[in-house]
Image 1 (tube, rainbow, N blue to C red):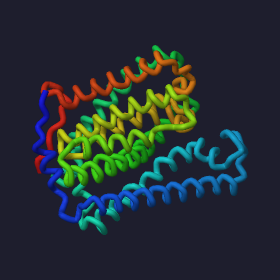
Image 2: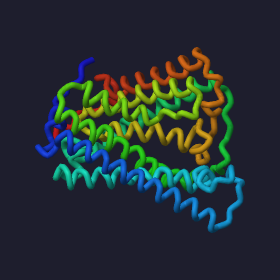
Image 3: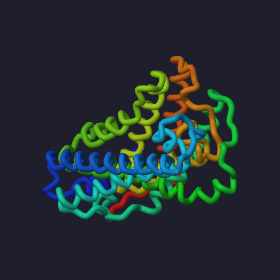
Image 4: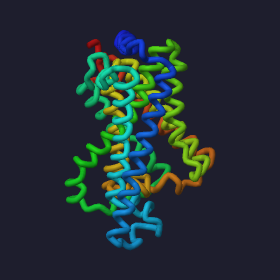
Amino acid sequence: MTIDSSAFERYRRSPNDKTTLFRLILGVIIIVVLWFGTTMAVIFAGSYGLLLQGQDDSSGGSDPIQRFLGSSSGIFATLVTFAGIWIGVWIAMRLLHKEKLPRLFGVSARISRSGFAKGFAAVAITSLLTEIAYLSVMPGIARGPIAIGTWALIFLPLAFFAFIQTSAEELLFRGYLQRGLAYLYRSPLVWGVLPTLIFTSLHWNPSSPLGMNIGVVIAIGAFSALLALLVYATGNLGAAMGAHLGNNLTGFALISHDQTLGGLALFQAPPLDSLAWTAGETALVAGISVFSIALTWLLLLHPRSPLRVRPDLG
């Protein structure tokens, strides 16, 4: 199965001559600083609000920051912090590259709505299949603490804030970095592998078991590679944004394995850190994830798939 690169070739040639390696690095620094600043401002404002309200420690721990992050408001606030990436990318594009932000969206300077919908649908399907497979390794699933009525009321706001988070990551890693590096270097080892490695490394958690980190990194790395491939196949961020949202929204709102960010999920599955993480369990969990991502790849890129994404040719 071959992939037509004509859309991506147009996308990679779309930057102007102000896209240099120095400006790209400076832009990343601006983005990270604004992201970090936004995160600190939101978290400390929320934690200070808890102290002013005199809330007890029932949400877990005596640290107000941990209590805030573990609350429903903290989950929303965590997602909001990624708005700092949007702001940072906009500033970098306007000040350093003299381009409008929509130029990062695709050849047509618009997010492909059909690509977004297909990416979301494909990952929603494969995520559910993955959860069924995970339950064979980690049996036990229970209703979350949130009432169904409350969950229904907050689902759309949660989806919107999850979109802020996932689209911001795609804008930075598959848009700003992948497009800029592809303009400067023709080798996919630079524009494809480098952003994937950076994105994957950010998910390494030193406090987690080694087996869990290895399994997660393999899964995240494979998923990140799929997102980069979707941009290569379409010349647009739409499919990657939809796929990323489908993946994260499943974990935030439907079935969560995360005790910190899973408070709003309809169902809660055993946390990943509850596994013994033997070599066999690590290989099995990583294998399930990679198989799911390969299935997603077929759904979105196979010529006969009804969810096949189309190239953005402007």
